Image (cartoon, rainbow, N blue to C red; front, side, top):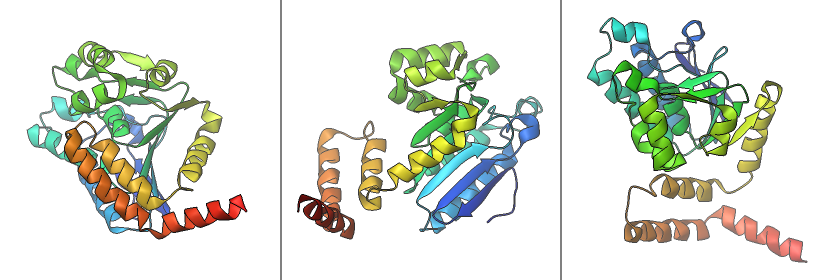
Length: 251
């Protein structure tokens, strides 16, 4: 386990929890956040035993996005935006299943962290938005990911107005996957992870790569990659075990 910082990692068996840890400022993201986020990702990429990563925020918010105090002081320049989006891309491409556990605000860079995860579970009182235009900025590569989640029209609305929406609307439009009462948040996250990890790690990992790249490659490239990955799956011990289980059930 890494030493707690503005982002820290806790590993319990094959499940890790990546925690944004500036609760006094609703986990707003500054330079130290970026450094610590990359350090946590270094650790995750080295640990091949981790099969699922819960991404969350300490305290009463997931993340309120960019640290406006640091921004106003001139501490955040273009390289910060480059490095935070490089971290999100690394998160998005982890082989492990990633689940965002959301409470309170997921705004700006906080919402972008959730979009880089595979699945999103939020409390019913959570709020979501990309308010960067209100600070005369572009909301990072949220402009790239968000339309792929909720469609062009809805993405334009959130990006151009900077408004916040509630969890029930976020669930309805596909921005999050589950909206649950606070008391059920941990239980739901654990249940989702347990159900998902029952399948083949190889098949899930290959499928994740293809879904992530679905809007980034043409059909022929995707088809060739699919056949390559499918051949690997057919040869895997997971597939042999699944077929043996099927034959046993049929008896």
